[in-house]
Length: 361
Image (cartoon, rainbow, N blue to C red; front, side):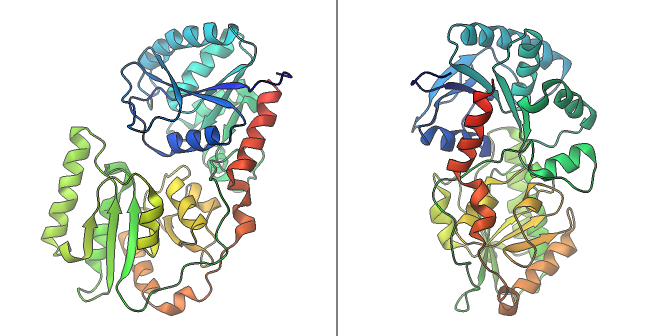
């Protein structure tokens, strides 16, 4: 660990394809050049057209599932990882998904010390994550204090034991203002899956007067399974039935969110169990305000009325009311960028945190 060569970090996800905020965060860490990052995935992984990371394929797990079957299958992966770790003292395992958490548990029982885990989700079995935290100690890190409040059902928490995702560059110094020469554009970015709750946004739009000058632009595509395709079709059917076609645009998957953020005025994150939301962070970095459901990672990103707005989760009237309020330019007067608040999310700061943690292993 004290040599001049880079530490090699195996960022294990157990995924079949490269999409989502976890992959984005790993990519940004790799781009710092501080570590040699390797992506750990399932056999048969669908590589993106633009491949920037070395990839290692392992015995197939379900990346986001905790079950007895997945637990025992994770033992196979852990043995593979154990052999990889023992081949070089400068290697570290960093688990990210639920599968990564299971592999980390096996590695602990194999007495492998060079193991860390990032928890990226709000799991239903709170007791399980608390127990894993007790076993792994400071080798397990949460994304934000909101995650600690969720798992320990407490009112107050801080950034100790938390390492967030990060972004390159510097946050904007000026906040986006309400346009007056065209309809207000609300943007949503992410897969067209039921858990993202895009149906709440459409329902809120349907609650507004037909002449309300507001549009919803969505960047993203179905996840590739039948359930996601069915959900996407239901969204389009709802739009037709409520005569929203002229106010809703489905842009499909975008290779970069930067161009999308230039076209819209506000980002909406309706999912109330959003663990972090890279989309929200990217929006705030670009000076774009965010509307998000309370109770998740956005709680630690958004200051209500200052850089965005927080609304009650699963509440169409509350979201519709907030959309109505921001149609008034007066609602934007108090918005202001807060670069100091966002500095902890700079990828250089995040990489420095991980560098210190890896060094302790």
